[in-house]
Length: 131
Image 1 (cartoon, rainbow, N blue to C red):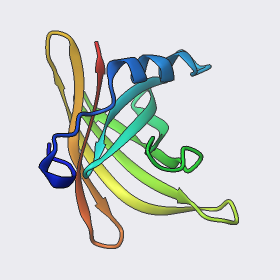
Image 2 (image 1 turned 180 degrees about the horizontal axis):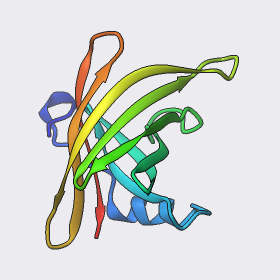
Image 3 (image 1 turned 60 degrees about the vertical axis):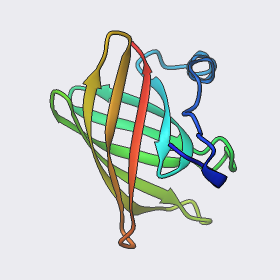
């Protein structure tokens, strides 16, 4: 993908993913690196019995601003997620819906799809991790 001035921008590195994974207390939570639109993003997801719970953040922005993700894994290879944005009063407001499909290569697990914001904007999104 091309960034500002046509310079290619890579997803967060496997080293960044490994470091973030090492900081997770719950072994069931998996960390992925990817993009929402053109922005690098780090995702932490727990998929358990068809339910998905997690969050993501933009490492080049305020790391304390995390977007909550809740959803389902309705069938193998599909994630349906809802994004919630935390307001100043601590409440969560539904801000986007996402549908992703899984692709596995010899060494990586990829999730790819689209984020549809409640304000009408849509962004491609993807995230991956070493298998």
